[in-house]
Image 1 (cartoon, helix red, strand yellow):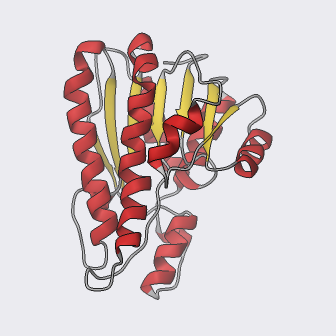
Image 2 (cartoon, rainbow, N blue to C red; image 1 turned 90 degrees about the horizontal axis):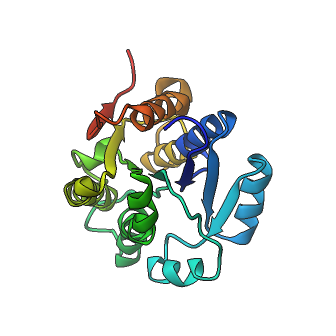
Length: 232
């Protein structure tokens, strides 16, 4: 997919998403960067000259279609990269429905809705849908119920989508990074009451390398599931 491909990216403002966007931008691909509001879109446009932005709140997936109907959508989509995510820890006995809904909306329902909205362009381009999932999408631990549920759901979305879209030539990849040095990880440590040392965790650039590898594989191959863990 090298050279002048068009990618729609969520979560490009920080962490893994920013690393992926930077790498694709540097090699000359066209970027359409999702932002939750106009101010964020302005920041992204300044950070990635030439990139287009698309504004809509992932926390309110019911309104994404309406929001996008007022904006110019890309006619071609080679890659739809779902990298945005939110996390809020807590035991099941204390999690509010608001906390559940927020994580399920941003981490699962919004990716499903974005995928639905861009499927015509993805099919036309024989494109790639890539989900940056989480180790929590494969196993759930105490305090992680809502987040892990959203990420287990994201795996189900990817697996079903892969079977549905295979006849259309659309590839679907899930990447499951372990703990990655990012603002989200700093928040997790704060909620866990633990000191945060970014050097202990995966560099976002390393996860970005795996994302580009999956995107750039020749057409005869497809990465389905890829787990990335902190090195020793």
